[in-house]
Image (tube, rainbow, N blue to C red):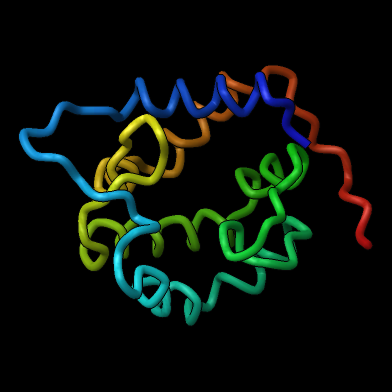
Length: 139
């Protein structure tokens, strides 16, 4: 699991990387009515099950109180299926989801959706030097 320092560093790097000043306040995503309904297209994507299998993640991150481990996140970035899933999510963020902020730094979901898979991977690799890609112990 990520330590508090690693989580903070990752959040800070992502916020600095993609944070732009906006003229009007943007609501938090978790306050939008039916926000989860915007993800139905992604849940039907053919790459979701192979990605979850490749990473050992059994629930959609954000849909429960569980967090992905550092190893699971590393496997996500090493998976072709997860790349395809991220690209589907990115298109969804860009084209379907209303603009809202995803974190306490004010990062817009549209800004996050503008980043390509390799850009997000580079942020992760800088935030988690020496990341482990050891096999995940399945429960």
